[in-house]
Every structure is written in C-alpha cells, then in structure tokens.
Image 1 (cartoon, helix red, strand yellow):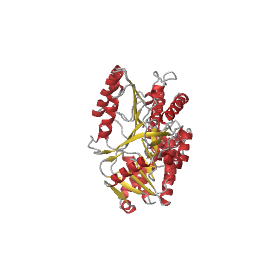
Image 2 (cartoon, rainbow, N blue to C red; image 1 turned 90 degrees about the vertical axis):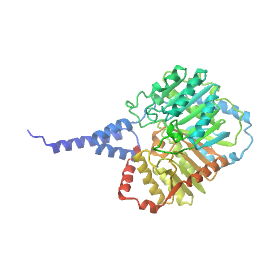
Image 3 (cartoon, rainbow, N blue to C red; image 1 turned 90 degrees about the horizontal axis):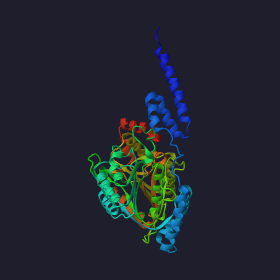
Image 4 (spheres, one colour; image 1 turned 120 degrees about the vertical axis):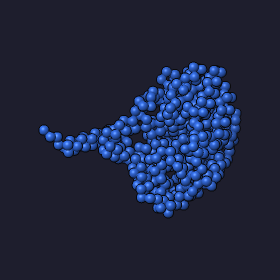
Length: 486
C-alpha cells in the first residue's frame, strides 16, 4: 500500500488553516494582529502554534489589580491635605499650560483616574552614572519604605550593588519590596533575591511567574520603571537596573536614556501604581485595606513649579491610555513635536496623527537608534522611518551609542517621559507608565536635550532611504508584516 503524501500534505494544510482561523478569531483582537497571526500560523504550521502559545494568548484579568477603589480613596484624601499644606490657590506659570491643555488633562482623568499633581520638583537624568549615584544616595537615606519595580533587574555589578544596599536597609527595619519582570530580568532568579528575603525584604517576579520557560504569556511584560522612597521621592523613565544602562557593555557603548526624579504629590501616582502591581503580583503578602495607610502617601511641604499626571496602561485595559496621550499631544502641537524612541512601530492611528501634524506644517522630528538591539524590531523601525520621512517627518539616527529614551515634547509647553516606546508592544502588550508634564521650563529643557542629541545624529532624508539595497528594503517590509506581534 502506497501513501499519497500529496494528499496527506493537503489534509495537514487544510486542518492547520482551520485551526489557525479558530485560534485567532476566538479572542477579540484588532485586524492587524489577526492578519499577522494568521500569517504566522498558516505558513509556519508547528512553529507558529508554539509561538502563539507563548506570545498570542490574552491575559486573564480576573485576578489583576485589586483594591483600586481603596487606593484611589487614599489618594484623594492625601491630595486634599497636600493642597491645603502648599496653598494650591497660588497660581504658577505651569497652571497656564494646564489651562491650555485642559482637554488632555481631562482625558487622562477619565481614562486612567490620573489626578493632576501641582508644584512638583522634577530633575532630568540622561546619564546612567549620575542617575544611579542619586538613586543610591536616596536609598541610603530611606527611613520607612523602598518600593522598586523594574522590567530589568540584572545580576551584574550595578544589580548586586543595589541589592546589597536593599539588604542593608531591610536589616535596618526599612520596608523593602521589589517587583521585577522575569523575562526582562533574564538570568536573575529568585535565588538572587534570597539575601533580601532573609533580611526581611520581599521580592517577586511580576504576576508571580515561576519560570521564564514555563511562562506561557511572555507577551505581556511589566515594562514599568518605578522607584518610590518613603513615599516622598519617586523615579520613572527609561533606565533599568543593569550594567548596560551605565554604558558598560561593548555591544551598545554609550547608553543614552531619559529618567526623572520627582518630589511632590506626583510621587503618589507612582506609589499607587506600585501598590496595585504588588497586589496583583504577591499572592500571600497583599497590601490590604488595613495596610494602605497614610505612610505610603505622606504630605510634603516641598514646593516646586511642575504640574504633571502619572498615567499607566497595559493589557488589563483596552483603552491604551498612554498611546491616546501621545496622539493627543501630537494633535495639539502647533509649532513642533519632537519624539525620541528606541523603537518606531506605530499603528495606523499613530501614523495618521504623525502624518496630519507634519502635513499641517508642524515640525515633527523623531530620533531612533542607528544600531539594533532586536533585529526584526530594528528593521520594522527602519520601514516606518522611511515611510514617515517620505511624508515630511524628520528622522534622525542617533550616532553616539544606543538611545533608549522615551520622550515627547511639544511647543515648549507639554512633554512626556516614561517607559512606553512608540510601538505596538508598548501600546497594547506591555504594562507601562509615563509622566505627562505641563511646564514650560521642563519642556524647554527636554527640547535642549533633543537639540544636543541632534549634534551626534544623522538626518535620514527620503533620498538616503531610496539608496538602500533591495535586500535591506525586503527585510524591512517583511519585518513590518510582523509589527503587531513584535
């Protein structure tokens, strides 16, 4: 008896196609992601389904982020006390920006309950050495609590330096809690944090993932970067904890990123986000109603000039709050909109916003790296850079190492610094956090930093993109097809 292999092959193809259609359509997702996954599942029968098992399934939401209402009540109470303490009837130049940006402020309040925090002191860091020098000093001075949440917490020189300091503070009786992403912190196991646990501190991988290899939802990562010390000092931005972020890795060389240090009620937004993430992560050590005390939201008498909203987004919500914020800022720009992002893989709505701004005479500039850290992501970034350059957006390739900053500044008035890249993953798949800032001086400082970075960057004109080889353009186009799942 002979086997008709062509018939067997045809049957396998048909069954695979049916399974692919059933698999992709059984969960609600956008059209771009549907086509991308169909492409993978149909043309890579076995490999595609394995990839889908790890990357394609949705995140269960029933156990996420408990006690949101109680945390919000604590925030409201402490914010009222903060306003009375600082005399918030006094008007500042930043309040004029808030008035102009009222629709953006209202949108964040509606979509993410992101309160407007006034009169903060904010300092910008663009170098890892100066950032971690300040972070270490603040941790050493901590008296009550240290809350840390990072996508990457590596077991390397700076990782061990931070860990040893946390162990020391835990032994002194300071409450130390750490959340890390098991995928982003590849190679860092629970054993690494055992000295901290032995000293009385606590550390868990985000959503309590037991093993990277057994994590069948590696597509949903905790990309947030949060440090809160004594409830009064907060950090957020693009830096992670690892030697490469201090320029110690030859592969990347100089690491150019942007992070901010906050003093004021803006820290409350970071603290609230940490508490919610902790409760979703730690099954046996919940910060419950009896524990959410004013100590986590202390009133400060420090008075600055910066107004801000802390906005978070993630796959636990379909609103894509940070993406909506980016689009809102782009459409509000009248003179210029300058963006820095290591990855440029925008969806259709973001592409339209950038096109409309550029075609309306707004000076739209986007700065991306000139070197890859992920090959498919980098080629997709080049594809979209080429498309935008052809439509009037100025594209710069940063040339002094690797740029990892996630910033946006418009018209010397409104800006954003945070963890969210300009790509599908940050918009829909990752848990992210950004500070949206309403202040002329802060925005002007970000503008000046961008101008300094232009000095070591190269403008990519449509003519330069046209000179690229057909093979390179093919790789870019192919990578673009995978954009929704990169």
